[in-house]
Length: 325
Image (cartoon, rainbow, N blue to C red):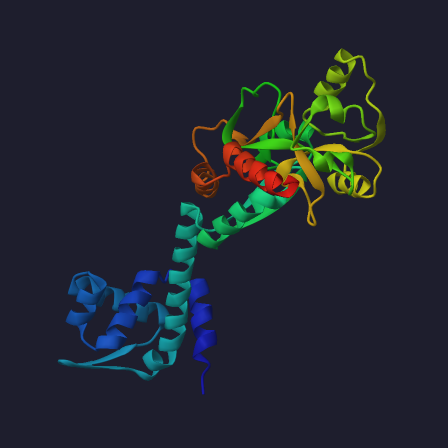
């Protein structure tokens, strides 16, 4: 018995068979009527008939036995029908995949998260984003503050969640997301546990664990100098997890963004005199046209219900008052 599948593959490689011919044949195989098959394919009957004839010529045999009004698939037609159906399914899959890629429904986004930004708030947003757009793959990359601009401008990253304190780069656009208070974290049973909030002057008098990427690092040293104090830095580290472990072990106190606190949370208080907050933004290149996938992320992040500083402060002060009472 001849192997028609192998015959078909050989013919596809050597002849100009097109998808329309396959589509016409499958419609005719379903209806066994040239008129209804043409209607199903939204073409004229002569166009469909010519397409079937060209397909038969390319394959070297009849696919349909014509007997007046009665039509029947030939042995060749019956044997190749399943192969044609597979080809058509693949055509539809390729078309669907192409449409999803062009529209941004299927893509991979490489997103940087500045190393000082904790997961508490961002993780929830990214989780909801992924559920809303399951065909988008998001790869997260740890980024140090000095590397943000180069990674974006060279195309290494599509976007970066960052906390910028310097001037804006002219070739980047910054989408403001939320404002995050800075807090002082301290070891268990530290005197700060009895404070509602902690003035900065009291913090700089304590043994200090310093975050090397802290946005307020220079400000803290300048404040200490203005107060005729020398900041007693007992440890420095770029690692946020190490900073918090050292504080938990009683080495000293440290200044941290609120949403960077790891679980189980350290004891902490908001900083006052002055109040310190930072703005978290989504940085992207200043292109007029974003990729569809990146545009979805920007729109989603812009409209997300981020926590406000006022709400966080109100809830915190209420909780502290209950504890101190």
